Length: 415
Image (cartoon, rainbow, N blue to C red; front, side, top):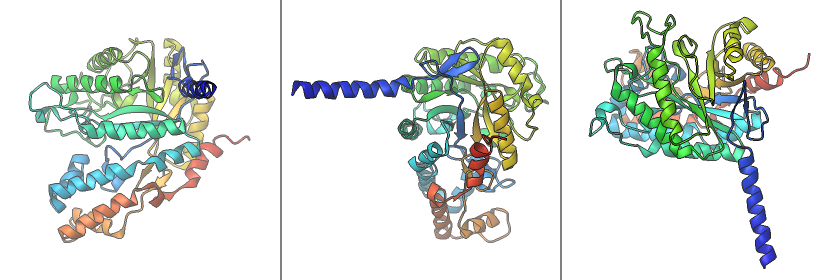
């Protein structure tokens, strides 16, 4: 009996060792490495459209400026209670274990999770006590479930604050910003809530080896020096952005000294003027790459950062192009030992692995929102919306194998 018990204990300890030997990935010079020192090139997918809806993903460009506008349109059709039912089903079905299992089977080793702060905490103007933080369980529970699936498939999960309190830029769709209220950069309360949220997340996941790191603020696009420079592409200082990134990092390091901090600059993540030198020895510099050539020149400035500052670089978001472009981009990244995260896994559109194919009734709703047809009844509209929450399930989407082949098979083909 004693021998049997010892055998069980040894097996359990071996299992724990195997689990944790994969380790918390970390920065080592210009590389991202596992705890055993082996370099890892992140091959990731962004889960856009799940916790944060962007209008174009639902073919609602021109009809809604952001998720809040989409929600208002739905409330107008079916009321608050049925809207809540719809969004609960959306969150339950858009990302499930089947999605993560598929990503693992296709060859991905990481996931970037675009988070909306309002799933984790109240807006500053909704707080019962100004300056305090009310925590919402929904976002944490969804993230816990996703992490459990990632663990099972040995995929690293990178948390990305895609919609920060107040919104981090003038591109309202990507952060669900309400431009009638103070932005992240115009409100100290929004900044403090952002810091507190990251400390809460880091404290929760500090000892999780399959958390790949924390992507602090997605695609800031803001003119700090000149408000006419709406997206911050001409910014030369970025002082407010750097200060907030430092303040968030300090708060995270109070509870988590192990996980990588991924930072993004201004101008949708690409204007790093004023951001260097860095302030932590476990930082990765992220850039985003869309709609440009796949040549060395297109990434040279980031390669220069890597050499000059001895820091890893990561393409945290790219995609939305042709399969030939996908192949060329990944070959460019591989040639230069750069990890990447694609965008997105699924939407209504074909330039992604999974295409949402809505029921014909959905287009009748779109027709109404365009002003081209009569308003449907509550019963009809609600039925259509709930059907959409079924259509977004992985097994009900159209799988574009050619996209995956372009990213893995063609990108790795030997000439």
